[in-house]
Image (cartoon, rainbow, N blue to C red; front, side, top):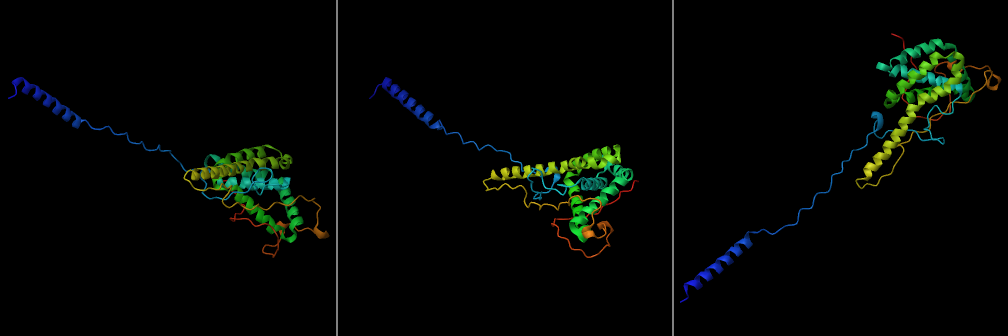
Length: 280
């Protein structure tokens, strides 16, 4: 029979073993930390500038780096007439703080009436020399293109203050200086549109980069469907020009509805007629 001392020793050994076994069972095995999710990179789809629509067509760029517009390569008289049309568009489109555009336009028609009439006669001669009896149709086509160009809705906000600045300068100068100032004025009036086309082309590039982040094959384009080059105004002719020695009939004096045949480039058009804006 074992002694009492041996029994106590065996009991203590057994107790320690049991405690060790319990401790070993109660300690959980360490697990590897979970893999963190990939970082979320915010992506914001680029939007067209100035509230323009998506997939809008813009002109192509010419050899001089400028976008092709109906104002390129025009004579001084044609430039003055395009300035007049641009200010007419401003008178119709610029409201609120830009209301002076309407008042200025009517004042310009009165103050510079003779100079504008002479420019109109010169432009008539140019179209008659270039297109003969089709001059009226050719001029009306280009006039419509010019009106639509200056009436592009996204550019109105930036165009109106420029139109007011140009109108202020025109009212402050004598009519004898108007023709010389016309090319400079036309360049200033066109700049907001050149800037818009450049911003839209940049938007298309940024859109392509955004799309490429999702693994797509992207081709960067300057314009979804580039606009064809607009028709160009004819060159200047002398006041005494007569076609084939026949008396000259200005296109603006031709009978309405007379059949004419004229070869001019086509261009997407939204009909717009010049409008005199009465002062309220």
